[in-house]
Length: 468
Ligand SMILES: NC(=O)c1ccc[n+]([C@@H]2O[C@H](COP(=O)([O-])OP(=O)(O)OC[C@H]3O[C@@H](n4cnc5c(N)ncnc54)[C@H](O)[C@@H]3O)[C@@H](O)[C@H]2O)c1
Image (cartoon, rainbow, N blue to C red; front, side, top):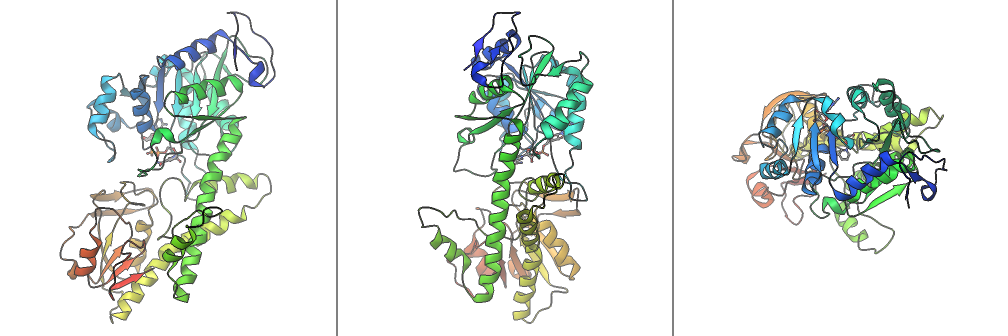
């Protein structure tokens, strides 16, 4: 697809990859990426950046992780993990292959490629908070060198790479380098920029991480090729798209599709409850159709750093185009009503046993936003605790993955996971997360009332169970 130009011979080309002549500065990087001898810097060593660093190290790349959180860097340098599903041995294995972590951004200049994996949350007005991307760009900009590849992996609205990241990198660069633009492939004075969304599904054990194709869109064709080559070193397939905006929008379409379908099934659940129909049985039956139907499951509300947040990045950006994203707004409305729906069913369950919510002792099972993970960001459990307490209930929780809950952006709970015994001491056991290690039969046997938001008690018959 790419031809190799002789050093010093820059040629003018169209955006079409087939016509692009690869200048020397890009060719050297491409060769190192192909040979897995390239040095890769990963900025942001969280749920996305750390596993990505480990994959890269495993494939032989020399990986340096960068984070502003000195504690994380210290842990990694000591060979310890701070993410439940990543074992310390994996960190040690990567370290043996050269993986290091640092807070010193000057070391970015040693890298061939730099991958940005920093958070993209919403602010208090539910608008995109791009301060992490902006701050990262500011810290990285001075150290960007000629011919380096910079890839943004954080989920964001179409236009972020070109409207925010590139200008910030160019403005702060000490050598006055520019991002390579469409058209003439410069021999000097440029770096390359691409967007490639992270598609990891935490806790998913059915699809291996490297089997998830990596979508890649460059600011121009050389960047696409460099980034795709890098990802082909660790993923079985890279999907090249024509621009950063297409790649940015692809990620949002995927997550909005999920958000809207979960809202649909949540609405169907609320109606089915009124009609006395078991929605989970309906979904299982519908899922037998071999085409045109993909099952989504209802729950107590959305959680995690993606599905409750990402759609609003698009609805915010759409306003610039006088466009109202009605599906997103409606899905948000339905999904955000689910915690209150759960609390209503706890009240119903207690009421059936002639008990009031005020003064009731509730043990909530599961603080994580989904099963078998240790992530409580945006978890509906946090909202449900608040709502139950507002009604006068005393709430404790148990979560094998989350021993304590302190203070977060939207909560200040200071709670510790309670032991899973003496269940009959509680007026209600509320299943919020269907972790695999729970013995649901034993839970139903011991509890006085079980409110189940996940169909975790499927197949168990008992008067004590309220499914909602
Ligand atoms: N968690 C997921 O499952 C998932 C899946 C797909 C996409 N994403 C997207 O990936 C991005 C990262 O998410 P995450 O879950 O890894 O977040 P995270 O909060 O777990 O990790 C982000 C890391 O970035 C660090 N950081 C923040 N500002 C920094 C800066 N200026 N310089 C260097 N490091 C900085 C933080 O200290 C933290 O370690 C987000 O855009 C998210 O939407 C996440």
